[in-house]
Image 1 (cartoon, rainbow over the protein chains, first blue to last red):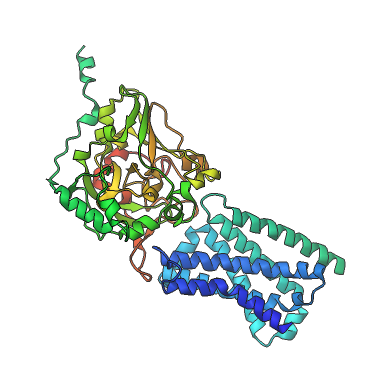
Image 2: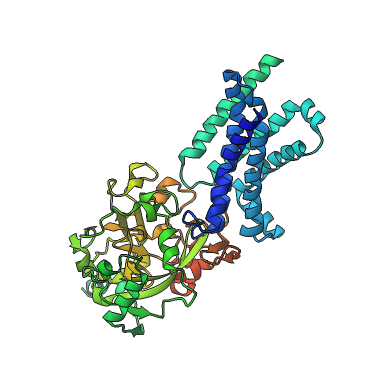
Length: 192
Length: 318
């Protein structure tokens, strides 16, 4: 079981490994606008991994496989890892780490406000899982999954909002989020 | 009668041009061109005799002295949705496009309408190199050494009549060669337009090349518009129709999102895109840690074009 968890976690890190190789000039490199490539790819893989993380629970529930209990946490952390690079490369490199510039940019760019909020949600959950707050974590599971769902909804919204024309992927992710949220409400009702 | 006679001198013909032009020899341009060609293609390309660029002169008056972007950056980082939406899609997906032979249909309010071969429209002896800034609506920019002729020279030949207030351009529609056109990303074929005054401005160029060689497919071969004081999407690529008309044409991005992309689309750091700031831009090629730079009014071409918009509310007519 533990071995399967490691395999899936490693798979989720493949895009990061490829991106690192691109950084060293392999696979035709990062292109003419390297910082944009890093921001876009880490953002995309962050939201993809997060939604896969959320999909594991309903899929595992119907397949009655034990893996679904172990996998969400490491995958969720991989997602946070991508989003952390996404955010830091925007803040420190694209905006040169200038807090005033970043604040003005976020105010002028509505999809950044949404992205920020989603990032803070994900970060807060990530910090909880690192600290020795396991008992608190276990007591407040529904609150925490609520925050993760909020992060995912905001992330998809952020992705959809910055595209110039309607693109397939953010629409698909939005549909998945609607289905997931529906399932979440249905199962939490059954429990109570 | 005297009123009628004054009509024979069109307003666009009044603009006088005194440009210092440096003559370049054919052999020199060919050596520049062959130096730019990727490995393995040197022979076939340098002996190619159907190039649109036999020779060109440098126009220093209208050229910026800022460092030029590399040929690689210019030809691998493009927005040309006809070949896909990724920045490297045009470079990857445009190999099957056939830019020759090329005809352009001229129609609407002009005396000389009909189908023209590109060689009849573009006087290859009058080609100039102009190093222009290009500012994309997505807040990145480049510096590109275009080769072309002023659009005004072509328009004069076509003799538009007094009803011609706008000139509209269309990109060729070839879904079999342009895979992006198989999806309804935009309303194909792509359409862009200028007012006659904008079209006749000496800065407005029809380009057939860059860095001394013919345009590559991803750059809008074989002929494209270059309007350096407007956001890049106005500079329509692979043009095969030019239409003169009295009413304001519907343009592609304006149809797609009229609140975000106006007809004028002049570069303006004070008027933000509804979803992002236009006050700064990332100059491509400035390195991984290169800072963004402030965007200039009319992309720095204020002296040449500001008079076209005098008294206009640029927030309303964005």
